[in-house]
Length: 433
Image (tube, rainbow, N blue to C red; front, side, top):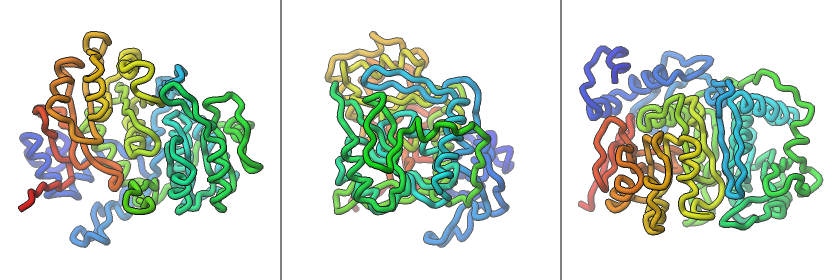
């Protein structure tokens, strides 16, 4: 609010006034957000919004050139960039410096295989560090990332990736869920055989240290990266709306539909939501329970652009007992806990009282999405998890890879209600009449 007042010489008295201004003056709002968030770009250009009255042809920042990955890899010190906990008990840490170095090596490897801007890279991955590494390596080149959760069947994966003709398929040998391990190699081989565009299959070990390779064009990640020196990444500077992600509709009305998201819009939306609506700062440790088949994974990865730590978990959130995620939160000093209304309901029914059993003094925000959070869910959080937390019931969608309605860290929380509409989002609600 103070930045907007400085930028434009206007008085913003409260959050509703800021929202009103953001939708009345979208070009000014997004220009201020760009500066406030410190977007890294080769150029921004003079034009912020072109053809604002033509919804099909309107364009934001048409003269800008930037790279999404460069914005997420801005921090390169020895602090935790990613912490990963698997259901099988594995705990790994990747520093910001290590993350940059690994992305640099994978980016160089992909380039050596002929990957160029506009090519597609597909991943069948658990919610593990290598998924973020692969996405960033693709984005650094200008290749387009698309991912599925490893619990998808072969046909479900083919229904999605078969539409986008990926050049490289990156997958894991398996995953863990609810105390069991599941093999992925057979379906990786099946998908690669069915999609003729796939030239290379990169296998990331997870269940086994040295898994078998699914086919003659397959290689382990370690071998793919072997002998590749760490060098400065030559981040491709691309138009603001250059494709970044391909996500998919649910498939309930036929085959899943491809939804393409641009780099600049995704970056600005996520920076807005993280910095303003979620109060995420450089020192924060941010968690969202998600899989690589849900847009909240893309949302979570963007936390790196705020130089905060991404906390990943893969497996059942209730195994071996309902408090596993709260134990993770306490151990890692989690400041932002993202989950679903269904999970909060499950914890409530389990009899667990996390506020009594776990040290959650660092936790400032709990976000819930996936379905509406009931008043009983609100009451459980404040009575049995933490009394002084900002509980944000948020909602958005795959179609915008972000949110329509969000939290507001400077506003009140009312039981059973969503706090606010997203800044710059002219969200309106209509009844049956």
